[in-house]
Image (cartoon, rainbow, N blue to C red):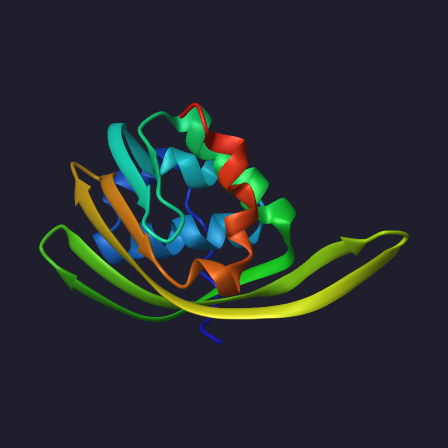
Length: 152
Protein backbone atom coordinates (compact mmCIF):
# COMPACT_ATOMS: atom_id res chain seq x y z
CA UNK A 1 0.00 0.00 0.00
CA UNK A 2 1.06 3.54 -0.60
CA UNK A 3 1.53 5.90 2.26
CA UNK A 4 -1.54 7.97 3.02
CA UNK A 5 -1.30 11.68 2.38
CA UNK A 6 -2.45 13.93 5.16
CA UNK A 7 -5.02 16.11 3.43
CA UNK A 8 -4.29 19.80 3.35
CA UNK A 9 -6.82 22.39 4.37
CA UNK A 10 -9.21 23.39 1.59
CA UNK A 11 -7.50 26.75 0.81
CA UNK A 12 -4.22 24.88 0.33
CA UNK A 13 -5.67 22.56 -2.34
CA UNK A 14 -4.95 25.05 -5.11
CA UNK A 15 -1.23 24.92 -4.31
CA UNK A 16 -0.95 21.16 -4.86
CA UNK A 17 0.49 19.60 -7.98
CA UNK A 18 -2.26 17.86 -10.01
CA UNK A 19 -1.19 14.33 -9.02
CA UNK A 20 -1.15 15.32 -5.33
CA UNK A 21 -4.66 16.78 -5.68
CA UNK A 22 -5.94 13.51 -7.18
CA UNK A 23 -4.31 11.50 -4.37
CA UNK A 24 -5.79 13.83 -1.74
CA UNK A 25 -9.25 13.43 -3.29
CA UNK A 26 -9.02 9.62 -3.16
CA UNK A 27 -7.59 9.80 0.36
CA UNK A 28 -10.62 11.89 1.44
CA UNK A 29 -12.93 9.22 0.03
CA UNK A 30 -11.02 6.54 1.95
CA UNK A 31 -11.70 8.54 5.13
CA UNK A 32 -15.39 8.94 4.12
CA UNK A 33 -14.84 12.71 4.06
CA UNK A 34 -17.09 13.48 1.11
CA UNK A 35 -17.05 17.28 1.59
CA UNK A 36 -13.24 17.26 1.35
CA UNK A 37 -13.38 15.05 -1.76
CA UNK A 38 -15.87 17.28 -3.55
CA UNK A 39 -13.94 20.42 -2.51
CA UNK A 40 -11.18 19.26 -4.88
CA UNK A 41 -13.50 19.85 -7.84
CA UNK A 42 -13.89 23.26 -9.44
CA UNK A 43 -17.14 25.16 -9.69
CA UNK A 44 -17.49 23.84 -13.25
CA UNK A 45 -16.46 20.21 -13.68
CA UNK A 46 -17.47 16.94 -15.28
CA UNK A 47 -17.18 13.59 -13.49
CA UNK A 48 -17.81 10.52 -15.65
CA UNK A 49 -17.96 6.96 -14.36
CA UNK A 50 -17.64 5.07 -17.64
CA UNK A 51 -18.17 1.67 -16.04
CA UNK A 52 -21.75 2.41 -14.99
CA UNK A 53 -22.46 5.26 -17.39
CA UNK A 54 -22.95 8.15 -14.95
CA UNK A 55 -22.03 11.78 -15.57
CA UNK A 56 -22.16 14.42 -12.85
CA UNK A 57 -21.63 18.16 -13.19
CA UNK A 58 -22.91 19.34 -9.78
CA UNK A 59 -21.17 18.80 -6.45
CA UNK A 60 -24.40 17.79 -4.69
CA UNK A 61 -24.99 14.97 -7.18
CA UNK A 62 -21.35 13.90 -6.99
CA UNK A 63 -21.48 13.85 -3.17
CA UNK A 64 -24.64 11.72 -3.32
CA UNK A 65 -22.94 9.29 -5.71
CA UNK A 66 -19.85 9.02 -3.50
CA UNK A 67 -22.03 8.31 -0.45
CA UNK A 68 -24.09 5.65 -2.25
CA UNK A 69 -20.94 4.00 -3.63
CA UNK A 70 -19.47 3.84 -0.11
CA UNK A 71 -22.72 2.32 1.19
CA UNK A 72 -22.72 -0.37 -1.51
CA UNK A 73 -19.15 -1.41 -0.84
CA UNK A 74 -18.58 -1.46 2.90
CA UNK A 75 -15.10 -1.11 4.32
CA UNK A 76 -13.99 0.13 0.90
CA UNK A 77 -10.49 1.42 0.36
CA UNK A 78 -8.86 2.80 -2.77
CA UNK A 79 -5.14 2.10 -2.94
CA UNK A 80 -3.39 4.31 -5.51
CA UNK A 81 -0.75 2.13 -7.11
CA UNK A 82 0.78 4.70 -9.44
CA UNK A 83 0.24 8.10 -10.97
CA UNK A 84 1.52 9.81 -14.08
CA UNK A 85 1.32 13.55 -14.55
CA UNK A 86 1.80 15.71 -17.62
CA UNK A 87 0.91 19.36 -17.30
CA UNK A 88 -2.52 19.49 -15.71
CA UNK A 89 -3.40 15.91 -16.67
CA UNK A 90 -3.16 12.96 -14.27
CA UNK A 91 -3.61 9.24 -14.74
CA UNK A 92 -3.98 7.26 -11.52
CA UNK A 93 -4.00 3.46 -11.45
CA UNK A 94 -5.77 2.13 -8.36
CA UNK A 95 -7.22 -0.95 -6.71
CA UNK A 96 -10.56 -0.77 -4.93
CA UNK A 97 -11.11 -3.27 -2.14
CA UNK A 98 -14.15 -3.72 0.06
CA UNK A 99 -16.95 -6.00 1.13
CA UNK A 100 -20.28 -6.23 -0.67
CA UNK A 101 -23.31 -7.58 1.16
CA UNK A 102 -26.11 -9.29 -0.73
CA UNK A 103 -29.39 -9.96 1.06
CA UNK A 104 -30.72 -13.46 0.42
CA UNK A 105 -34.01 -13.52 2.29
CA UNK A 106 -33.19 -13.64 5.99
CA UNK A 107 -29.52 -14.32 5.24
CA UNK A 108 -26.83 -11.89 4.23
CA UNK A 109 -23.94 -13.03 2.03
CA UNK A 110 -20.75 -10.98 2.36
CA UNK A 111 -18.28 -11.08 -0.50
CA UNK A 112 -14.84 -9.54 -0.78
CA UNK A 113 -14.41 -7.28 -3.79
CA UNK A 114 -11.17 -6.32 -5.48
CA UNK A 115 -11.17 -4.38 -8.73
CA UNK A 116 -8.42 -2.47 -10.53
CA UNK A 117 -9.21 0.74 -12.35
CA UNK A 118 -7.88 3.96 -13.76
CA UNK A 119 -8.89 7.55 -13.15
CA UNK A 120 -7.97 10.27 -15.61
CA UNK A 121 -8.24 13.82 -14.33
CA UNK A 122 -7.60 17.29 -15.67
CA UNK A 123 -6.69 19.98 -13.17
CA UNK A 124 -7.20 23.62 -14.11
CA UNK A 125 -6.43 26.57 -11.83
CA UNK A 126 -5.79 24.25 -8.87
CA UNK A 127 -9.12 22.39 -9.08
CA UNK A 128 -10.36 19.27 -10.84
CA UNK A 129 -12.11 20.25 -14.09
CA UNK A 130 -12.73 16.73 -15.36
CA UNK A 131 -12.47 13.22 -13.95
CA UNK A 132 -13.15 9.92 -15.69
CA UNK A 133 -13.15 6.48 -14.05
CA UNK A 134 -12.64 3.22 -15.95
CA UNK A 135 -13.05 -0.21 -14.30
CA UNK A 136 -15.11 -3.42 -14.50
CA UNK A 137 -18.52 -2.44 -13.08
CA UNK A 138 -19.67 -6.04 -12.56
CA UNK A 139 -16.73 -6.70 -10.22
CA UNK A 140 -17.19 -3.47 -8.26
CA UNK A 141 -20.86 -3.89 -7.28
CA UNK A 142 -21.55 -0.30 -8.36
CA UNK A 143 -23.93 -1.63 -11.01
CA UNK A 144 -26.50 -1.81 -8.20
CA UNK A 145 -26.52 2.02 -8.18
CA UNK A 146 -27.86 2.32 -11.74
CA UNK A 147 -31.53 2.60 -10.69
CA UNK A 148 -30.68 5.42 -8.29
CA UNK A 149 -29.74 7.81 -11.06
CA UNK A 150 -32.43 7.41 -13.70
CA UNK A 151 -33.19 11.16 -13.59
CA UNK A 152 -29.61 12.53 -13.61
